Image 1 (cartoon, rainbow, N blue to C red):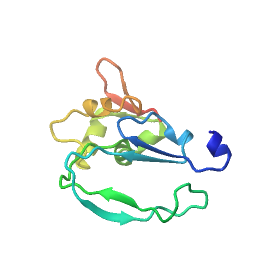
Image 2: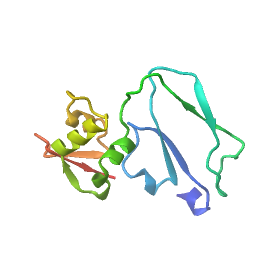
Image 3: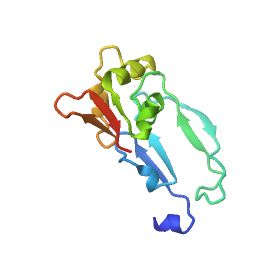
Length: 139
């Protein structure tokens, strides 16, 4: 907060499974990092977005890793893009969420949607706790 008060841009780099709910209130930009099981060569280099208050010099380049495996662990961002009504704080029935996640390729045919949302307890709440049938985004 001290840095933001002094007009500094504050970035957060975190593993997608380790980020807490509502990081946008503390950081200007959040970059979620996925763990890649198969290390592939560096595919491309891209220039960061140019900003006047950026602490990163524009001459530095960001590198992205491309893996040979197309399927990977869905991130919170991917889940929210597939289920946009969760961003507004609405509850969504798990059967609807599971159908859409399967259509988007984020959930396999045999996987349970509850186990997927339980990987992100800080971001998603399953209700009722005993036999959940709804999911809500905590952010």
